[in-house]
Image (cartoon, rainbow, N blue to C red; front, side, top):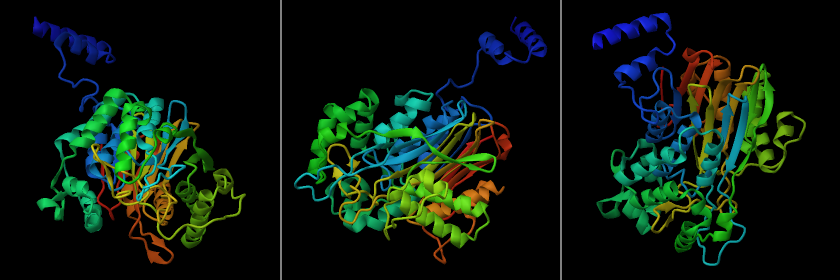
Length: 479
């Protein structure tokens, strides 16, 4: 009877290929993983690229489970708070661009860690207001596919059961260990040999208290972090860490979501978030397309980034109708970035920051949470998030997503790499292209880029993704 059933199915499949899989699954069963499980998506699933490999792996698993690019981006964002807390934290923030091919729209979600209105007495290390939980939830609520609690679970598991330290995080940790290890909690979590040495590449990093916090957010919802009983505990913990944040200010910390600023770029549309580095990178791309020299384009990019930070409307800078104004500080807050593309052409680029490497250098007790530094206070300048997106509205198709980390060179590096990809170079070649800043080789900026030269939906084979070879990131995908 089973052989006859198989024969019947073969005949039905020959008559109509559509639905063949569902007929055989119903009659004979299927070994295909369920939706929400890695392996659910077969063939082309898109790609993910990030500065920290463990986060990239988690994002790829979400794509392979049937999640959207936004689902994967939320996973990566939370994972970075576990695997690269030197630059990303639930107490930090960031900015994202997300392209929705169904509506042919690109949105910008800003959730940067900002300074509180009032610095509480006794705060010797003023902390920033945390934007990450609400910011990534706002992004997910618009374009997510899988349940929010499911896409943040990998970060909870990684923190609870431990994850090997990557070279990317080990490099940051070694750079600050002498002063950072003055904090006893830092020594306990990130040290070994009694805290005399920092964890090195390959050592196991376990953060049970942070896992408990993510677990509470997963079970109680993001709102509890900002205005519930959890918020009161967070406020007490920040005070104990020397960076007191009030419950009232936590409650009023909200992300800003709006359509991205856009400008025509040939037959495509160039989208940016209204933050300095993003605007600067777009201006760089415009100048290079107009065939001005790299040096002149870089000057225009830095001037536009400074002007945007000073309050000049990005639309005026992109249209070249506003004079440049303002200046960039010599040192800028540390950032990390990632980009994600799914099989349907939905794409996300995000830049995350704590406004300083390891933020305040203090950990909120009972939460294992590194606090971001309040920008504009003392010697802590705001970060310079740099990210761009290129799409084609008429065909509802994705073309490019890229993000750069680093100091003032970030928008310049991003503009150069994105321009190379738009000119036809593969992602690998684009991010490896030589880059200079003020006449010297730029060795500090890191670009993560995804490009589909013949668009997606369209040609899967034209898509490529790559991390900057100057860093220690990872790009993953499948076709």
